Image (cartoon, rainbow, N blue to C red):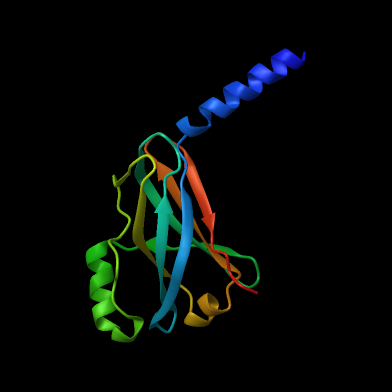
Length: 153
């Protein structure tokens, strides 16, 4: 029995690096009021792929969890749209890193600094008094990485 458990443990440990994974570190979150009932959130992220396999982005979703706990999906912005909006609202600051895009590849053991922006149909106060944001990044092979914002209390 002990031998079977040891073999199973070794098998699990050896296969750990062959699963698509990402470690997402939230560097900065910026919010911009784009209208009375619409807002934009811009996330600056450091993304690390600790596995031994390539991670190819299939989809990126951003979710707002407001003060009441209600989840609302945002519309993720393309790089050209984000640049246009940030040019229109210069107080939000420029985009410092490329946008995390569809089909982008993050190599095994690699790290990339990326930006994700999402538009939400809520006033800016809902973003400022949120519980947190949450990103869902899907790999082309189907693995989904969920990264909640670590918001200081």
